[in-house]
Image (tube, rainbow, N blue to C red; front, side, top):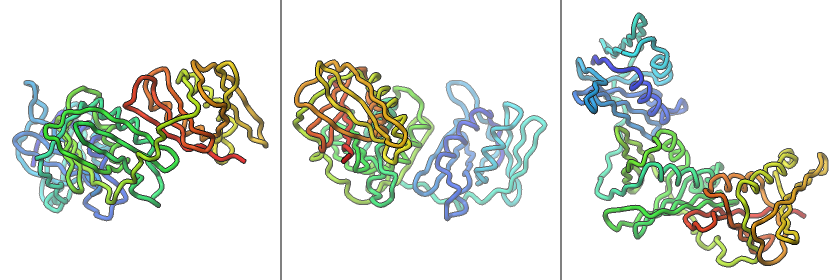
Length: 378
């Protein structure tokens, strides 16, 4: 195998597939990146058997030449060294040549590296996916939906299903739900699925986070195919496979209260900053608890008290306070995460009592919802 390639294209491709390469894999060849040169261009693959990413660098695109293939072939190179070498090469053009026993030479300008490669035939094949049920979604919408839900997945392996985001597609509406049993994030959007298919899958939160980092902020549609145990995201020159989590996601619809006793309308930024300040003294305490109380004249108080450090309280003018008086305690981190995920300047917070979950939404927008369980403080 021998080809000559533009360095920046190679660096980008290597960075993308590196997101799937793990140093902790039980299959030694998966610590490498598979490189295949063929007439159309160069394909790079990285995998840790949960996530697999394939990045394609076309020989030419829009009249520009990126790769010159001298001889087709394939090799697997240690990802750790290959990625570092490529980043630090001196010139804009890189030549890669594989000799006997997969020994690989990487040249650029006056620099020349020789790396021991492995046989690409031994690299596990990517999942074969039947592409009969495809739905499309604009890339920027997909990234937003991931950002607004993935932070709420569980990080503990005690209930593995909660480390994923539940994707449900029915009647052309995609609903994404994440919960760690203390909070819940929900985001829905209408999308165009060509066939009225129904999906209910749980995608690992880690996979979605990595996918989101790779994708560009464009409105280009990305194709999504969900099968029994895999999901495939197809973007331009990029394939991203992830396994799905086994098991049934809990029914979260009954957690979301339909009525409320106290409703607040607040400026999102003011509320976020007040909680941030209140949490300064609560951070030391184990649970980072902040208290909210409604006062008269549409004022609310955000406060926190750590007996060994001190206390803080701040009043905010709400735009509207409706309903019963309320005192409630909650995790500052959870509410701040929720507020950062919501869009818009005004938010509605609906409470159904001091011990019941409360809901935060963007005003006049029902496509997003954040639900948080209060903390008992006695």
